[in-house]
Every structure is written in structure tokens, then in C-alpha cells.
Amino acid sequence: MVESLMEIDTPVLAPKDLLMIEIDAVPMEKGRVNSFTGHLIRGALLRMISNRDPELVSLLHDGKNVRPYSVAPVRMSRRRDQRDLLWEIRPGRRLRFRVCSLARDVSRRIIEGLLTTGW
Image: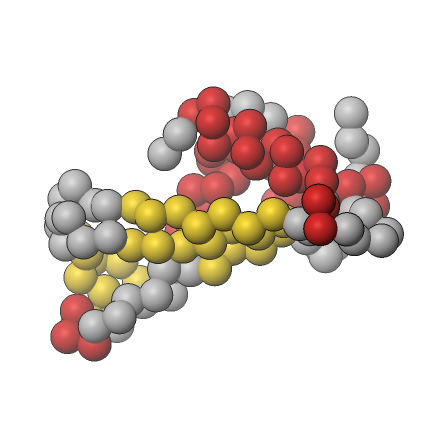
């Protein structure tokens, strides 16, 4: 098992070590969210991975080390959807966000988590 983020990091990156997944989510209900969604996306990713690999979640979340992954928050394209610094979420309107990883082991575990639990 991995004991630290240093064991996860790959000193020399090759294309096979890089992962970028774009995820399209389509809300089923209306709602409002904070205009910055990065913390929501990161939380959802860690929750999804925790179903499969709670140890990895601890390594990715705890401590102050540089993380071998990133998330790109949902970007709302229409200004009219914003009210009082909250974004209006509407059923059926596609929302896209991105998850990236720079470490082969983390990438594999993210993919396994997605395939095992889904969203």
C-alpha cells in the first residue's frame, strides 16, 4: 500500500502517467450553488474514491503536501444564471468539469473509483 504522497509521485512523467477526464453532469433538479464550485467537485471526487479506496482519500486530502491531482470547477457560461453570487442550476443543462492526475497509481485508482461507483 502507498504510505505517502512521495511514493505516489512519479519523478519523470511520461504520457502514460497523465490523466485528464472531462465529466458531463446533467442536473435532475433545480438549485443554486456557490459561484466557485471547485470545493464541491473536489469533495465529490474524494467521496467517490472513498467508496473504493479510503486510504487514498486520506493521502490526497490530509496534510500540506503538493497533490498529484487537480480538479477544474464547473464554469457557468451565462451571466444571467448568476444571482447574489450563486449560480442557478437548471434541470437538463449540462455542466462540465475536469479531473486531472499526474501519478499513474492515482490515475488508476480514480478510474477504478469512477467505474465502480459512478456518479
